Image 1 (cartoon, protein in one colour):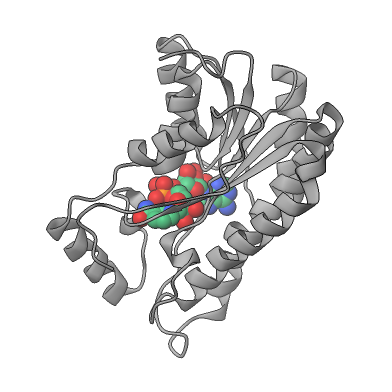
Image 2 (cartoon, rainbow, N blue to C red):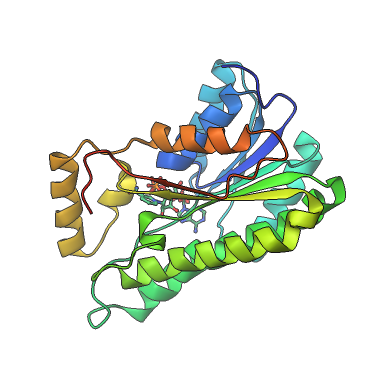
Length: 249
Ligand code: NDP
C-alpha cells in the first residue's frame, strides 16, 4: 500500500461485517487510523486485532446507529482518541424486501431507522468538525436499488433513494466548506447481507443469482471507496455505480 491516507482519521459504520469490514481494513492499509463502529463487540475487536497485526491503528466503538446519542458518542470519542475526523463512511445498513402489500410496517421503520436516520445522525454529528477544519469526506453507501426501483424491493429502494437525495443536497450545502460527498452504489455483493434477508422470494432469487454470476466481493467495493477518498482534495467523486460484470439486472 502507498500510505496515501497517512495522518487521516476515518470512521466506518457497520464495520463488523462485509463491505464495512473490508473498507476499514483497506483504509487502515492506506495509513488511516480507523474508528470502527457496529453493535457486535467481538467482531469489532477481532477486526481491530487484524488491522493492528498488519501495522494499522483501529479503535473499536460499539454503536447502534439508530441511537442518536450513541452516534454522537462515536464521533466525539473518535476525535478525543484519534485527534480529528477526516472521513466518514456511512455503511451500516439492513435489507428489507418483499412486496408492499405483504410488508410489515415495523420492518419498514427499522429499515428507515438504520439506512436513513442512522446516516443522518452520523453526518449531523461529524459536520461541525469537518466544517471547522474546512476539509473532510463523507461516503454514503447506497445501492443499485438507490437508482432503479424494482418490485419486491420498494422499501429498501426508498431508503437508498433517500440516501442519494440527502447526499446530493448535502454536497450542495457543504461545497463551500471544502467537504466532499460520495455515493457508492453496489450491485450484488457476496456478504452476510444476503443471509439476513427475511423475505423468502428475494432470498431465493439472490442466492440463485449468487450462483449464476461472479458476484462482487466486499474488497471490490472497498477499492472503489479508496479510489474516491484518495483523489486530490479539489476532486469530488460524487457517485460510483458498481456491478458485477456478469450481473444483468
Ligand atoms: P452486512 O450484513 O455484511 O453488514 C451490515 C453491517 O451493518 C454490519 O456490520 C452490521 O453490524 C451493521 N449494522 C446493522 N444494523 C446496525 C445498527 N443498528 N447499528 C450499527 N450497525 C448496524 O452487509 P453488507 O456489508 O453487504 O452491507 C453494507 C452496506 O452495503 C449496507 O448499507 C447495504 O445496504 C449496502 N449494500 C449491500 C449490497 C449487497 O449485495 N451486499 C448491495 C448494495 C448495497 P452489527 O450487526 O454488528 O451492528
